[in-house]
Image (cartoon, rainbow, N blue to C red; front, side):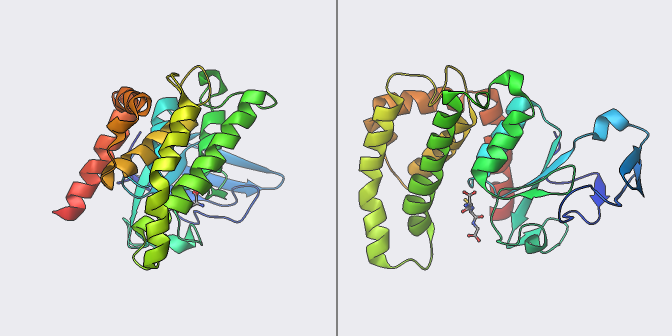
Length: 260
Ligand SMILES: N[C@@H](CCC(=O)N[C@@H](CS)C(=O)NCC(=O)O)C(=O)O
């Protein structure tokens, strides 16, 4: 998987919906010509297998998009990661032309459609490789437990707690209320995790990718996770997971580059 600097340029990245439409990808190595002949679009390429299903993930280093980055690596998917800085892409485009609400993650699918909510991006990526079990199969109770967990992490932990804490504009009482909710939230998550190695299923799922991402933030604001031994053991074990370690190393290196 390539990160940040792409070897090709895509125009008309975010077509509204449906078929890809005319799209040209220029590269030293590849040239893909889209022939828009309704009702079919034919892709002619010197390396069809290489580019089939390629996706673009827009991310901010160590933000919630880290969970999607981890998932893409876990699944070995053809995803190119682009870091967004100051609402601009690395090649100077206005990020709001890709994701109108300005949030990461945004996943631009091979069709040109854009997913722009963490839980949908995570599940889409997981569903590309169902055999890996990164999301339980649709129709099973476990799938609904996954959705339940992703919604909790996204709305209650990410948005209700961390959004005001990280915000430069939130009122002090709002920040204080969020800080006061940190410990009860970790108590709850500790009970929810129990002595299991994974948050939802018998193996690693996208909920674990998201939980590890949020545990980084607890640590970042100085919460001593060691006070919740089961969460701490879980966190340490997942930090050693190759996809987690690789995604975090890449994103920390991007942060270091910005800080330099
Ligand atoms: N509802 C979105 C929220 C995503 C979100 O809050 N992303 C943050 C980074 S963690 C962001 O892009 N913030 C940029 C901004 O607020 O302009 C989701 O759950 O994915």
